[in-house]
Amino acid sequence: MTTKPRRALPLVAALLAVLVAPATASASDQVVTQVSAADRAAALAHWTPERMRQWAGGDSLPPAEKIGRLWEGPVPAGVGRLFFTAVPGVDESCTATVVPSASKDVALTAGHCVNGGLDRFDNPIKIVNVVFVPGYDHGAAQGVFPVRAFAWSATYSGPTSGTDDDAVLALDPVDGHHAADVAGTQDISFGKPPSPVDTTILGYPLSRLAGGEALVSCARPATLETNSVVSAWRTDCDLAGGSSGGPWLRDFDPATGKGTVFGATSRGTMNEDGVTLDLTSAAFTDPVRELYERAGDL
Image 1: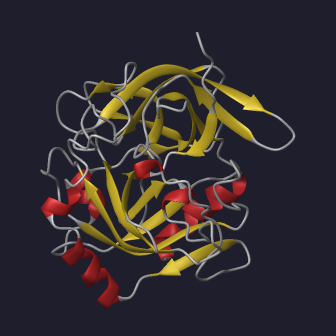
Image 2 (image 1 turned 90 degrees about the vertical axis):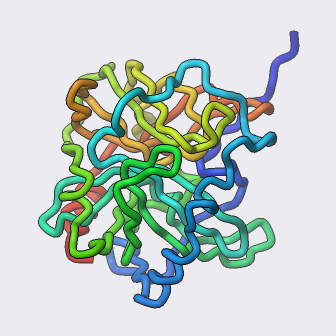
């Protein structure tokens, strides 16, 4: 029996080993990228139904999850796929969730899903073609919402760090309809629940189980682990890349599809075969709470 090496990587779709860090625009306490109207239109044109399904059936995808299960029934409120392109690079996808806001147009995801930085040759990476598709299920959806702005806390230093790996998305209404009205929302709380906490994790992993075409869930206890560098929730959920940014929900009721977000999928430990061995979510902090509270003004 051989021991396979373990790698701790952000669960970006396609499991690209790129270093994603700094920003296109900055403020004293958060990093904001504004997306022009022309670029939002280009994003909608880029993400055709065929392009969204490009990963389905891929032979190079990681093995199917053994703990994660395909979600049965309607996609829970506010949950959907986040599509984007890394330039230079390729199309990718993550997971995001609509959360309550005065604007009704705010979603939460992982910071590394929208964080542009440097590739291995120190070339700048730019994140473009960003759209959010709530309720995604084998091409069916509740709309395609272009992202007009995204931001993360200045305390987040990129995917080599597990601290504050969270980002907010400001979405354009579609045909006059706000994302929260169309897709619903999940509640969000910045108080730390007692550890361990029964947790439902949702995401769209790019694995052979569904190739990102269907929502996958884990219902597992999560334990809070704290050291001198980071405070993070950990569980043995095995969702593959593409699940990044997916909600970690407590008090989740499968019958109603509602719970309370207390984290978002950040990092996973994987073996050399691309099998996820565990997942972590950065514990929410005051900077992330402040980021969320200001997201409606983006």
